[in-house]
Image (tube, rainbow over all chains, first blue to last red; front, top):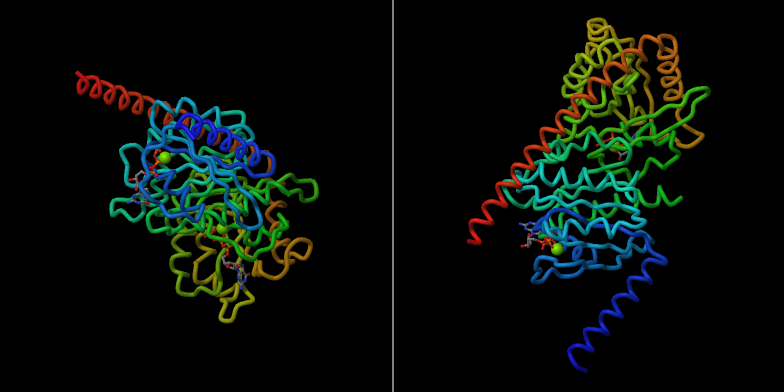
Amino acid sequence: MGEVQKGLMSLVEELRKVEHLNDNGVRIVLLGLDNAGKTTILTRLALEEASSITPTQGFNIKSVQSHGLKLSVWDIGGQRSIRTHWKRYLGSTDLLIYVVDSADRKRFEETGQELAELVEEDNLVGVPLLVFANKQDLLTAAPAADIAAGLNLHTYRDRTWQIQACSAISGEGIQDGMNWICKNITAKKK
Amino acid sequence: MTPNPFGSFVTESPEDVAPTVGFSKADIKQGRFDITIFDLGGGKQIRGIWKNYYAESYGVVFVIDSSDVDRMEETKETVAEVLRHPRIAGKPVLVLANKQDREGAMAEADIIEYLSLEKLVNEHKCLCQIEPCSAALGYGKKIDTHIRKGLNWLLGVIAKDFEALHERIQRETAEQKAQEEQDKQKIAERVKRLREEREEREREEAE
Ligand SMILES: Nc1nc2c(ncn2[C@@H]2O[C@H](COP(=O)(O)OP(=O)(O)OP(=O)(O)O)[C@@H](O)[C@H]2O)c(=O)[nH]1
Ligand SMILES: Nc1nc2c(ncn2[C@@H]2O[C@H](COP(=O)(O)OP(=O)(O)OP(=O)(O)O)[C@@H](O)[C@H]2O)c(=O)[nH]1
Ligand SMILES: [Mg+2]
Ligand SMILES: [Mg+2]
């Protein structure tokens, strides 16, 4: 098969997968600044090995089974040029995961600003928010309270939110986050 | 205060609750009242967010693990800090002495003494009631009667003094909102400056 054709086939395959997921699944969107660790977390959630992850130019999507739920998790690139497209991925989102590099204090306010703009979107009204305070394995990682303050989370009164400290590298905290996700989705879907 | 005793009200099972490092709210109806309960994480790491919710609160429910004698000192300091806050002082406080089903749980009277609760509430003019209870005993309709009693007491005193309380809450909430708006503007300016500086740098590097 020629390269072009192969590319086309995998695209069709990808789209079929996407449609399929949209039909039955719970839709979760993973967002956050570039380098926050979204793609690494996605591979963890899907119980895969994280090998040679590069900055995401478009998006990745994986189907994850947990607590009897079928989740389709969308991981979208966080580079500045891509951020303007975030909104296009928000249709009927059931839960938003926002990933923060806990050691990147210089950018707490910037990432908070991006989040603040994001949650104003119609598609995200009242949608539960899980903040993964990632990279807790680094010595300079900030604690949850600092991140809550940096992101101004106390002004979000219209939705349930939770901060989960984690390390996508060691895997610590990821399963706890997953439990919270499933609990809050079932609560909503009931 | 989490699904803890109020799991009872939102009819969830109190089992398998994870620590709250965040915020959730439950809307419940009790007689003629529409009540919103904010459930805030109690861990040391997240306690700092509490103060942001004081302005809009008509009353406080403080939940204590009565069986955790080792942390009663921490409880004492924390309760004192809450009641002392200018946006809480003068508001009614319900203390739930929870986990009474556990062996070694401190009795109501001992907790009052340990926390110097009488002195504290007099000092800060908070009406206060303490109820021993166990959130683990039943949920849904079978909620511990002490919790129901405590909540009824709280609602009663709020209703009695509603106008003055309501006026205060509207004023202080407006103040808080204005402050939040101001902070937001400052952050937006700082972020904007940061972005401009970065773009500048990138342009220079490209040349
Ligand atoms: N120390 C540490 N490094 C991490 C952790 N999670 C991710 N990283 C590293 O951070 C870098 C960025 O991770 P990615 O998963 O590509 O980040 P991303 O958020 O997907 O970035 P974009 O795709 O550009 O938006 C990689 O080098 C990861 O190995 C973590 O928990 N601890
Ligand atoms: N024995 C007993 N256990 C209880 C009782 N109430 C809660 N628990 C247990 O105590 C633990 C903590 O309960 P939570 O409801 O998570 O406590 P919390 O106050 O919300 O804690 P944070 O969310 O960390 O602030 C859980 O394992 C509960 O099942 C009780 O009355 N008796
Ligand atoms: Mg990525
Ligand atoms: Mg809790």
